[in-house]
Length: 427
Image (tube, rainbow, N blue to C red; front, side):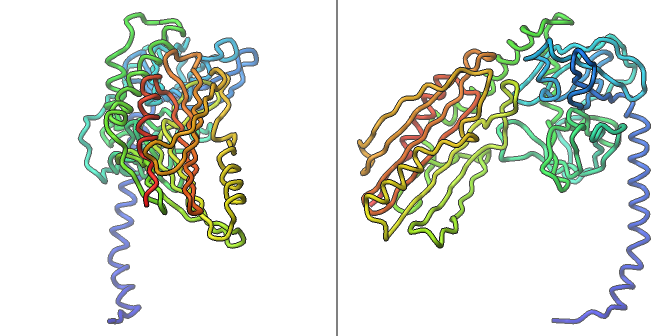
């Protein structure tokens, strides 16, 4: 391998560093200009406790029309379900009072909300076209950790595949409090709305085209009541789940094989699938965990988000346990329903469950538990939970879980049918 002298490396660096300094300086100047020109269209949104007026949560919003602002649904969600306990307060960057704040539209599936205020803002932000080159420098504006308005630089990296809802990857540090704020080009056009982060400059935006569709579908009345807003949100959720689940129930799911079992798997790029063997050196059995899910939390009620769809297979095998002991192990896994698997939701009915034993065409016996619960605030939508155990006759078994939120009854039945069709014990 050829060697390179330290002096030669340093000479290269000494040539490169002035250019790096110039680039960094130019970048900083662009960020300062973006802040000066466009931050006045950005405001802090405070969800305040109604009696004390003290903030309970903080996010960001921005003007897209003289009296309309965009933000994240999760920033204002609690007000919709507890309107007597909370109120909204808008704190514009320019310090001018915005007056009363009203929610006029929501899109829970895409985590967007539209607000209307009494104040008229003279310089709202415009939404960017759909075509943005990968690598373009963008600027995210918001209120990190309830601090003053900040600008964060990063780059546009295209759409996220492993998600049902549209998301854009932004390599900048979006922090709590910046949710709902704009990420803009140097020209001030909004490329996306800040929504989430995975840390280490791995952040996600809702693309401008999704916001454009919501703004084009606003109610005619300027101040609809909250019940009407929630009904429209339910309508959008129903349309979203129909578009997502219809292809899944229209054709058989692909399968993956673990040991002697052929198992249903995630059908397309919207699913993030992985498998991992568990280190069980001190146990008389082996275990492999296979998981598929989408990077989507459905915001259906107070208390957080729920998986749009989650698939899990726990493969168990033993060459040393006798049949009685192995069956006891499998039964223990089948009966284990952890709290995170069936999360509590005060805005839903209790789960109703049914147990069945299937063996036709499987070359093995499968025990299945079907559970479902309805969402009170979103008529027509329910949560689905299916736990199944497929047992072979050679010291192998698979305990599987299917979870889904925000799904209609017809699609829940169709998805369960396709899920069960994917199981087969292979010779």
